[in-house]
Amino acid sequence: MDQLDEIRAKIDIVQFISEYLPLKKSGRNFKALCPFHSEKTPSFIVSPERQIWKCFGCGLGGDIFKFLMEYEKMEFGEALRFLAKKAGVKLAPYRPGPQEEEKERFYEINHLASEFYHYLLFHPIGKKALDYILGRGIKIESLKLFKIGYAPSFPFSLQKFLVEKKGYNIADLFKTGLVVRQKEKVIDFFRDRLIFPLRDHRGNVVGFSGRIIGLGGEKSGPKYINTPETLVYHKGELLYGLEITKEKIKKENQAVIVEGELDLISSYQIGIENIVAIKGSALTEPQLKLLKRFCEGICLALDQDIAGDMASRRGIEIADSYNFLIKVVRIPQGKDPDELARKDPSLLKKAIKEAIPVYDFFIDSAFLRFKGNTPDEKRKIGEEVLPVLAKISDEIIKNYYLKLLARRLEVSEEAVLVQLNKIKEEPVFSRRQFLKREERNKTRREILEEYLFSLSFQKREPEILIKKEIKELIKTPHLIRIIEVLEEFFKKEKGRFKSEDFVKNLPSELLEIFNNFYLRDLKNIDDEAWVKREIEKTLLELEKITLKEELKNLSREITLSEGNLKKIERLNLKFRKIARRLKELEG
Image (cartoon, rainbow, N blue to C red; front, side, top):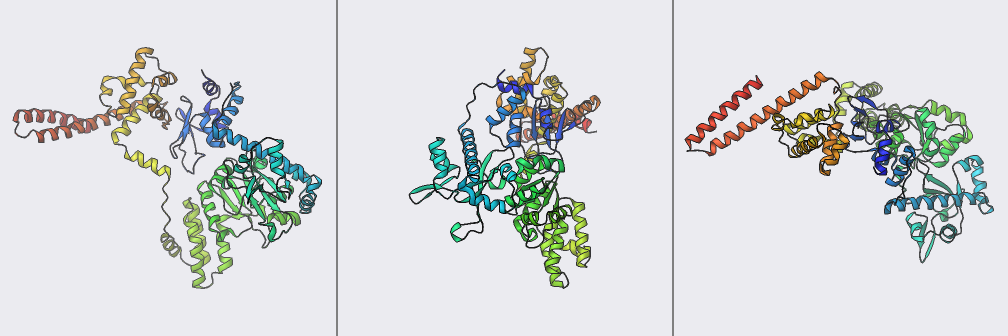
């Protein structure tokens, strides 16, 4: 047994995945809503017997390593170290792959850069920056908790520290976005700015955000500059502060979402600790998938008017598809969470407490801007609000808001519904639809044969598949090959079957097909009478299909035997015999 097998043997996949998802028993298996795509009906299946999982919605699947890598976005080596520690397995020296090695190096470089900037904020060189941030109401303990730093104006300070003192090469500093080329020189990317380290939810420093000190000016450049996209930093995936606030978010089952680092830190200081920050007002699918691990509700406390921002609308549609309870905080005009937290903390807390459902907000916002008194104003409100309501996934909620809109517009519900039906949504072709199409492309015979195999293996009675009368009904090539391997296995093992031993004899190209037999959701598999009935019904259907295929082949052969009367008579006799048997089965 190698180390990977030892880890798999010591960590039960059901218990492990249960730490991340609420699994519900279903027959021999367990199921849940998939964490990797949006769905209403559970299609994520875990097999305790095979110690594997698969989502029949998005197609992802694997073992505990694959789950951890997908769920936590870890490289294999990182997942290996995590699971080895959990299993109490001492690892032999592991050589990571080139990309994994590069990622680890980038994390190290970013961590050292973060420490360097943080140290300089409290050094005399950073006095101007420290005075500014303290003047913004940010406390010393917050500066230390969020590791705020200062990048000095000297253009070579960070690279001298990382290259000359720590021994990293300049090429890696380019790849992490910490240096840039300016004419003939290589200079630090962040200069004379407050630095906010950007961490993923596990605490790895993936990049930085640099803010000008004070009001700045034209020479100072943009108010904020961020690390460019790198191997470890992807703007659309990051939620600032989550590594610190995730436990509070879990406890509250809600995340307050703000736009900037200072919005978050100021709010956190006054006790709003279930909070994260995004860049801009648009939530992305990766951010929402990540948040879904920690809570079921989101509360948007954004500076911009999200009702008029199409990117924000798209984020809300995605959040709705993930079944989030979405609310919006009414921020007083001209204010932002940072300013409210500093000047009137109780008002910000009250606004969050009184946040309204997002679709009420959309309707209120439209009426606030267009009034709705004249026919033209009513039309404008409909044009803005109806496309939003059309994309609500829950039909009950959608119907409620359509009635509310009709009442407020003082028109009939029928008029609103007619207008709604004119809105054509863009067709979305998802992987789930692709997989359903693939299922449709299977013949009825293939579907029935695979169902029979699932029943037999999950019932732990695969020996029925090698019975002569059943073997003759199986026509799908890869299933015939599995039966052949099964026959050889039973000859060696003398009737004893264990799936973990059987797969050692199975060609690799058949492994996924075999695993799928165990992942099919058979809720009643422990009901022997039900299983017996299902097997009998499936065999009956397969026999009917076989007889129909034989009749079709005989018809073709009779047609081709024109002039050969003896052969035609013999074929007709056989045809009538099969037809009688088919009639008996269908009667």
